[in-house]
Image (cartoon, rainbow, N blue to C red):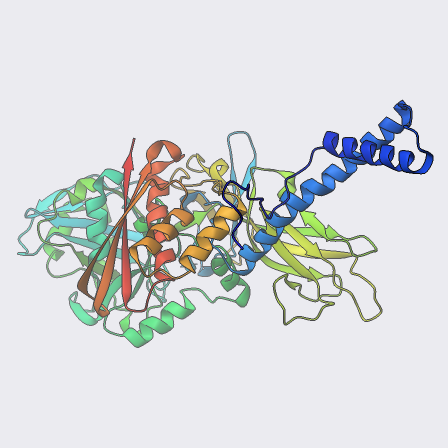
Length: 585
């Protein structure tokens, strides 16, 4: 029945009451009860007023918890169960180089490194991708453009730290700009090797051309052959993982294994902490395993064999008379300024991110109370993921939302950057006295600004005891977790989009929920022919303000990459997304 016009409509939610209001009600009820029993009004009593006030304060806390804390906690649990995306802290990234390598050694994201800030504080880093440390040297690097062959930086005389002086020589190849590289390798050839091209940010067009170009291994005759052509695919942290162009079956198999022998523990870290494209990932290339029939060595490619001796000092000519592993990278026609853009080339390199593998013992009490853990009690450190939680008896704890596990199983959950654990209970009703938590931590913005050579310790034990590590670039791109709206607004966003991106409004809602700093979203759709056939490509253009980011040049690249992946996991099959970021001052 509709109430008459002018009748105030009451909210179904009770208004929170203050302690003074509750104390007044208590006093009034007491006066009514005394008058009903004795027929008189009680005298004012300061002791009784104090009792009423103390009781009112306790009741007011219950009102406040029932009106605010409890609903928010329930919504937080619903949001966690429904998997509403919450962006964690972003790790800082740097390029690390291993030196003194005497024999092959596989390394993976489980390999821990330690960097030292200017204050002396230690910061943990892990590798973004698996690779192999190899006793490999860059023997020759040159680029052919504008009718000349010019040496590139990074070539050192064998057995010394002396670099070859700049040199150039005219040569006629009738070819587009081409990079020639030669390596002195072991029996495994270039398998699993990581190569870093130091290209300045303002020369992004050169880096883009290098990513799109094929990498061509040369055969025993110094010529290109079909089975030796590789192409790049994006890896963790934005690195370029080279795969075989012609042998797709072997490429998928190699990519699933990676260049290093991975254990199940090594695979957990990339899954729990997926690192989007960082500021340096696009400058690193990692080779796949080279099959035995493709490990060709040649003295020099016939196209440039005659000019190499004129570019190398005479006392090193004998070194270039021995066969080496050669490859060439033909760049798109019309590309210019390649020699000036490439600052150096280094081997045994990959990217590392400020992700620390942390082991912590969590003690429980005898009654099985839930324990809350925050990394070292430091608000500047952020929890990225839980690798494992193991109880006193060696049993693995399960996530709190796992309904298939036994009620007696130990459970954990991550809430607001904290780890909450409930101890397991044995058949004799005894609770675990402790649990061992293996966590992934990140320093966020605090991991930025580590100068070159600040990362200089390998925490994990390697068989290659002579290997040393140092970072070649300043660490950049770290950011703290975003400040999200309250639980009610986040839950409303989840209900509006239903976690499915179909319409333009869904894309806008999902983009704003993923990145609260987005000020405007524009969506255009068009059908395009892609490598997977005819697909509908949604061009999403988002607008942000640079002033709201600690390191815009690095963070916006990662935002574009992560938002694109986030939308593609929620779209209709056959649709693709291309995200661009417009940054204003």
